[in-house]
Amino acid sequence: MDFLARLEQSGLATWVRESNSLLAYPSVLFLHTVGMGCVAGISALVDLRILGCASEVPLTGLRKTLPYMWAGFWLNTVTGIVLFIIDATTKAVSPVFYTKMTFIAMAIGVCLVQRGAFRDPLLDKRPIEIKGKVLAFTSILCWVGAITAGRLLAYVGPGVVSSGGR
Image 1 (tube, rainbow, N blue to C red):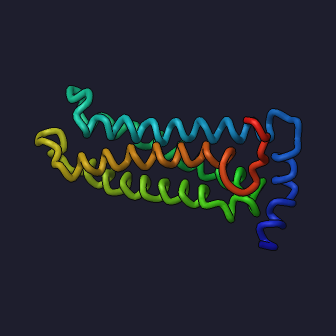
Image 2: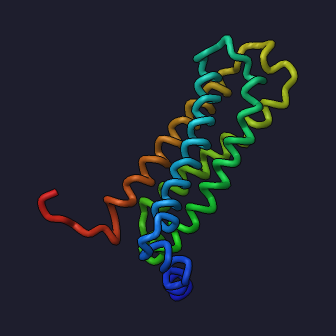
Image 3: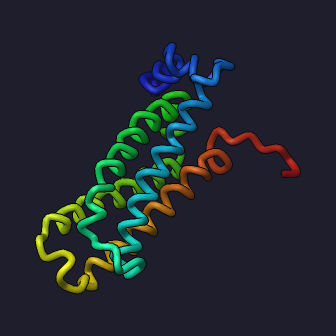
């Protein structure tokens, strides 16, 4: 806990948490949202295509969107670390935070498995197996879970100040 407290009191964490600058907390939160839109949005696009939506769009064509998805993931990783350190001692004991991280880990695992399928030269030539559809549906559920848990962090668990009659 001492390490987390030191992180929370670091210059960067204090500036992001307490500064009135738009470059501090608002920008970090905005970039985290943009990253989430890229990673979850592009993943959902691929997943929905696997599930049969827009079947006229070749899956191999969606391969070009994957670098943007991974860029969003890395943007979220960096901004997520910043958002963690500004409230590290609270987040580290929050079950909701660990729920969010679990959903993200599972979604990334599914994305990595799906990435292997994009190497198949016959990807658009044969029907998608049920296993691929189950993975796509699981991916969507994981991203919805991660986003929901992320939003709940502000309202549920340790560190949330009750406003009485909210």
